[in-house]
Length: 271
Ligand SMILES: O=C(O)CCC(=O)C(=O)O
Image (tube, rainbow, N blue to C red):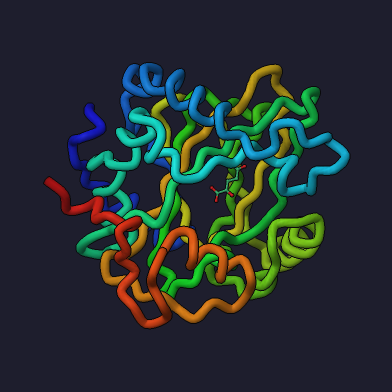
């Protein structure tokens, strides 16, 4: 197994992803390779933590959920290995059933232990934040350590990419309460299993997800990469977050353009 080797998901995996809007591929990556990448990547995360020095009581529920550092592939060679991994990108393209994928952006999501006052991740959908014309966008959630159930593993509501209620909510206490209720009323089963190092989950932009607090004593270290259909077009932003995303992750582009700025390299097929 090598980050550079393409991987073809089975028909069963493709079916489950279409049906559930998420899937976890066990041991997709080599744990030894991840163990080698983790220290350098974590150092880059801690160097760039935007909340360093911000008192706990001044942080929003969002900022308590995790240390979030974007665009790590520009500052960390280890992050670059994951972002440009043909193995991950080939799976993303297969799950989306598209011929090619580009980078939307990457971000590390490190959840502090709750005795260090790390919080839960409220229920939400990512696509609320993205000015994109279609639903062909997928996030790979890549743990850099084992994530047992007490460390805040990502939890999905299976089939919820078809639910429309709650799509207009940013990550907040309100999204937690309203989405939790709507998901229960809609009868969407919840899938929150532990991750072993090497396991990677993929979820669509419209799939509802959340994570419990990290009740262990160490950081939950996770890297994410977001992939777009290579043919994705930019949509007119419908909220301020989407306006920010357009400036930050699709620089120089406007609604109707192919989502292919210099910040969105082709990741699959690739040389
Ligand atoms: O890592 C988490 O707790 C949340 C992750 C998330 O929301 C995402 O990857 O879209």
